Length: 323
Ligand SMILES: Cc1ncc(COP(=O)(O)O)c(C=O)c1O
Image (cartoon, rainbow, N blue to C red; front, side, top):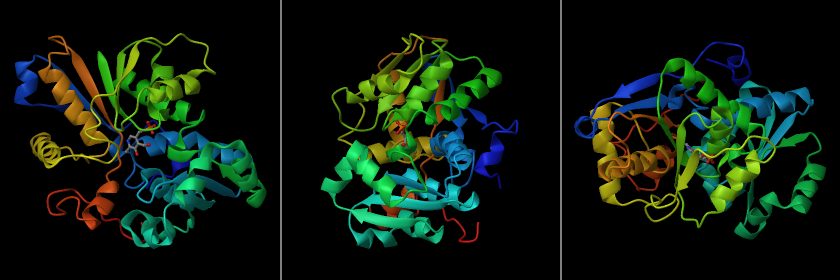
C-alpha cells in the first residue's frame, strides 16, 4: 500500500476511464472519469491530494501531531486519521456533535487508527476559523500542525494541481467537472490549469455565492488571472447531504451501467448535475468532458448505518482493521 509521502516520488497516476452511455451518443459528447477514488483504498480522492503536502509540511516542521476539524461523518477526518497513522503522526479530530457519534462508521475507524476525538457543540465548532480559537488550540497542542476543515488550505492546492498535470498527460479534453464543498479542490484545479480548460464546480450545498469568494481567497496568493471557471449553484438537491429517492435511483442506475461507484453527497451530485446539463444542451457536440471522482465512498457506511440508503445496493467499503 502506498504511503502518502511516497506517492510524490513515484510516477503513479490515478486511472482515467471512458464511460459509455446512450445519452452521450445522443448528445455527441465523449465522457471520461478521472478515478481519484482509486488512489488509495482509504485516503481516497481529493483527501489524498489535499493532505499530501500538508503532511510533508508537518513532518518538515518537526510536528508530532496533526489537528483538524470535521463533522461526525467527515471524509476528511476518516482519511486524516489513516494518513497520520501510516506516517507515525498523532491525529486529533475536533468533531462537531456529541460523544455518541464516536461509534459510527466513520469515527469508529478514525479511533481505530488512533485519532483522538474531541467532541464540541455547534457553537464552539463555528469558531473553527477564528484566529483566537485557533491560537488557544495551538497553545493546548503546541506540537500540532493545524489543518482547516476539509483540508482546504494553501498547501492543498499543489496536491490537487497534480490532477491537472496527470490529465494533461492522459488525454485532451474541454471540460472538467468537480464537486465543491469547501472550495479547496476547485481552487487547486484552477491554479494548475491556468485557463486551459473550462472548469465547472458543482456546489453540493445550498449557498449564495460564498464558495466563489472562498475559491478566490485560496487563489489570491497566485498572481495569475483565472477566468475559465464557474461554480454552478443550482444542483445541491436540497442542501448538503440531502437527496431524494429519485436522485439515488438515477445514481445507482448510472453506476451499474457505467461500472463506476458513486455516493450521493459529492460524486453522485456532480454526476446528476452533469446529466442535467447534458440534457439542457449545455455541452456542444464533440465536447470532451472529464468528471473528477473525488472519492468519499466511506461516507456510504454512515448513510447505510442511519438507514438513509439500502446497504445491499451500494458499494459500502469494508476496510479490514489491520489494513
Ligand atoms: C469526497 C469529496 N468530494 C468532494 C469534496 C469537495 O471538496 P472541497 O471541500 O475541496 O470543495 C469533499 C469535501 O472535501 C469530499 O469529501
